[in-house]
Length: 389
Picture 1 (cartoon, rainbow, N blue to C red):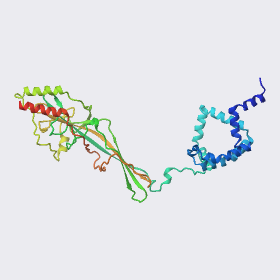
Picture 2 (picture 1 turned 30 degrees about the horizontal axis):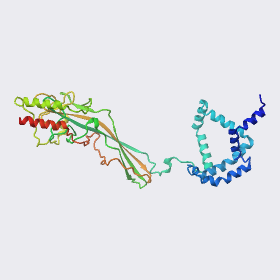
Picture 3 (picture 1 turned 120 degrees about the horizontal axis):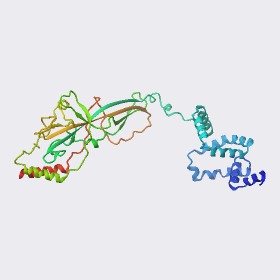
Picture 4 (picture 1 turned 120 degrees about the vertical axis):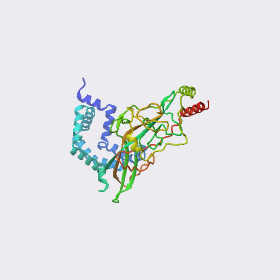
């Protein structure tokens, strides 16, 4: 077994340890020749691409080197470099230990420790301590954010017509109301494809003349699912019942041809439902109150005659049309916060009109393409053939 001095000498002559020791001796000025060479290489080092990619400015690095150089000389004068390397290696090896992690968390939770570390970094780099973002604003822009919310009741009408051999389907005539519409019979998207309006951001001048006001309108659903308006016979008020949504499906063309054949066979026995296509459905001013008073069945359907008149809560003879109302409550939240002059307005995805609701619950209509499905066109041609025979 080799003596301890010989072992220490052999370990110090190892390539990695020898190179690390020489690198640490250069800034300690243990070898003046190497130190002067390092200073002479400084101008060429500044021209290299690696130096230009540094995120920290060079003058801050130079200041930090000058500030830390004197403490480094004093530390290496009283403590040997091998001891410092041993301490640094111990810290690296024990960095992931549980007790070291608990010690780091405890130190970082101490406000005095963080404040002292921030001050040391500020002295070393010459950069002032970063202040909170709110402290840089004026008294007007530091005002609290105001929030206001409004509730909207979205209502979508589902319309169906009864056809011989097809039963109740969404295949309606071209001149009448669409299969999915609003209260004003404007085509809208069905509930499974209905989407809320886009969020909007508007900037207005501050009445105090300091900065601007940022108004953000954000839409969100208050209810998880759509609900049907139901009012049974004898009930005093409407109730909103959750029902499964009718999903989009393709109609069978063979079923349509079979229904057309049945219509031709029974043309002389049963009257064929007809609709005056030149007369459009009209909405009276009091239709909203009338809809509230209508009696429905357990699924929310209101049945009517061939011209969507004489509403009733029961189907049967002479009832060829029906509709029900799908509703869902949404909330629009408007936040108003002061912003500095430098903030740039983000371009919105769309340009919706300004929101000016007057009620806590309103019926809001969303336009959608008219449902001109191939089924409706085939059904119309089949009816024309049946009437000509």
